[in-house]
Length: 57
Image 1 (cartoon, rainbow, N blue to C red):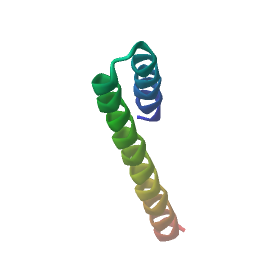
Image 2 (tube, rainbow, N blue to C red; image 1 turned 180 degrees about the horizontal axis):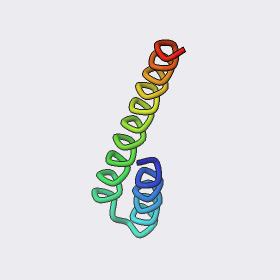
Image 3 (spheres, rainbow, N blue to C red; image 1 turned 180 degrees about the vertical axis):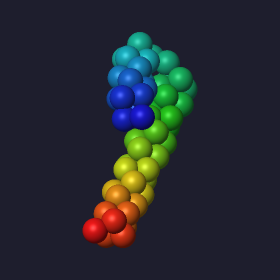
């Protein structure tokens, strides 16, 4: 998911340089959404990993 966030950020930068402001804005919003979703999922899995680890040992 972070890979796609980086791809959308690069696409947004290229679109901004070429003058497509509206499309660049949309691409950067998608990139931000994907970035935060990836961070939230990583934190949830991290916490779940610790709780499962404590139950197993």
